[in-house]
Image 1 (cartoon, rainbow, N blue to C red):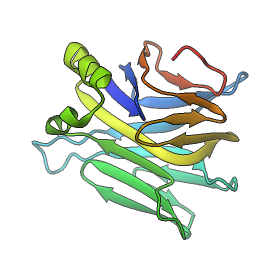
Image 2 (cartoon, rainbow, N blue to C red; image 1 turned 90 degrees about the horizontal axis):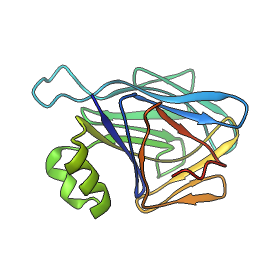
Image 3 (cartoon, helix red, strand yellow; image 1 turned 180 degrees about the vertical axis):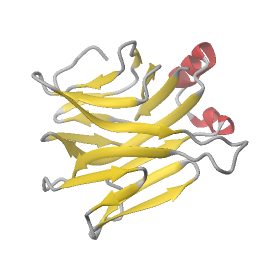
Image 4 (cartoon, rainbow, N blue to C red; image 1 turned 90 degrees about the vertical axis):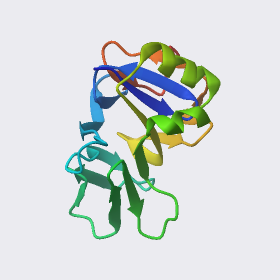
Length: 171
C-alpha cells in the first residue's frame, strides 16, 4: 500500500506511514499514522501518534489522538482529521487531514498528476507550525519551510520512508 503525504505543494509517496526528522546525526520519528479513515466503516477513523514541540520548545505527545499530560493543548478529532491546538492560538500546531477522492481536484496539477499515475491508497495533507528536535517546521497551503529552507512543487518517491531534514535538498 502506498500513501501520499502532501506538505504545501510538495508530495511524498511512500509505503511507510511515518514521518521522521534527520538532524544529521540521528533520526527522530515525529508522526505515525496508526489507522486511516475507512469511509465504508464508521469504526475506522484517522488515528495518529505524534511528538512535536510548541515554538517555545515545550513537548506535546499525542498517543492515539489523545494529548498526554498537557492541559494547555487540545485535540480536535473527526473521522478524517486530527488538529492539535495550543491554548491561545487560533491556528493548529499540527493538522493531519485525510482527503476524500472527490477533494483531489483542488490540488496542484503536479500533485494531482502523481496521484493519478501512482494511485496511492490514502492521501493526507500535513500542516502546522511546530518544532521537532529544535528544528522549526512551518507548513501551509503553498509552502513548507524546515528551518530557513523553503520547499515547493516537489515530488518525492520515498522508498525508505519519509525522512525530512533542514539541510536535505533532494526534494
